[in-house]
Structures are given as structure tokens and as C-alpha cells.
Image 1 (spheres, rainbow, N blue to C red):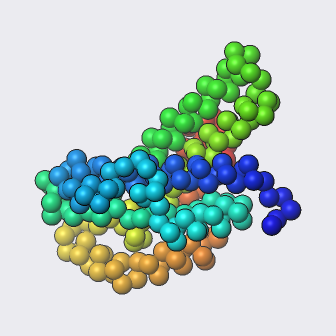
Image 2: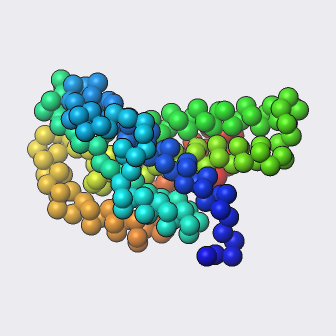
Length: 223
């Protein structure tokens, strides 16, 4: 166990990850159901119960990476059948988009709540900001905001199986989309795991600038 391991911080980050991933997967499932595809609903995925969305390997990654000092993981892919949607191409685009969008919206709400709490604490309306309870509350809200922003931006990368690949495919002309989908079916997972395990410099460069902008916009704080 690392000398600087903090159980409280570990549990808060794990809880924040579970919340963010659950909201993300629920948004996919619910938007698909609203579009006419009940595939995810029949499998119990239109749910806010984390157990319905957590992927075994993704959860192990959450535990290992959180223990290592940063949190990363994923949930079970939501089953979607575009042919059952009322407007397959458009609805499939929106289903893919609603995952990252739900995380951005949650980050905006939680970030704003954190700003209000800090302002009230500094104005002595509620207990002092430096109290242990207040520190934990603010830290947890910051974690939820940061993880939601990171999860949203990461999922917009156009590499399968990330949402960005489905969004790009839906925006491309039909023939280009067909070739792109074929390429991703062959090499997407290789590219995905290469990005995860070898992208130590690439990922921060891709995610960092927009994440810093959104963090400052929602919370007034810098990453």
C-alpha cells in the first residue's frame, strides 16, 4: 500500500466514478428508449442502480487506477438497435451524444452547487469552509465535476467503442460511414487500449485544454 494512501479520498473517488458512469449509461439507455428502441429497457438498463451498469473489468480498472492515484473505468455498453428507432440515423446520433452530454450537464450542476456552498461558507451563512465535513463535501463535489468533465471529453474521442466513434459515423456520408465503421470494427479496440496504456502524453494533450476551460466555467477553479 502506498505511504500516502488516503482511504477517505479513495472511497470518495470511487463513489464519484460510480455516479458519473451510472449517469452516463442511464442517459444512453433512456434516450434510446425515448427514441423507440426498448432493447436496453428490456435488459434493465433504464435504471439509476449502479449495479445495472458496472462492467466487471471496467470496475477492476476503477479500483486499480483509483488506488494508483487517478480514477478511470467504464460501464457495460448499452445495447442499442437503431433499426427500432423512429429516425435511425438521427436518433442513433443523439443516443451516442446523450452519454457525454449528461456528464457535462451533471458537471455544470454540481460545479455550480460547489460554488454556492463555498460562497455561503465564506460568508459565514453555513459552517466554516475549513471544517472537516465541509472540506469533504467540497472535495467530493469537485471530484464529481472533474470526473464528469473528463469522462465526457474522453468519450467524444472518435475511436471505437467510445461514443465519439458513433457520433462521427452518424455524421459522415453513408459510404464514408460504412468504411469508417468497418475500419473501427477491425482496429478500434486496438487503438482504444493503445490510447489507454500508451497515451500518457497524448491523452492529457487531447483532454486537458477543454477540461480546463469547462472546469473554470463551471466552478471558477483551475484544474
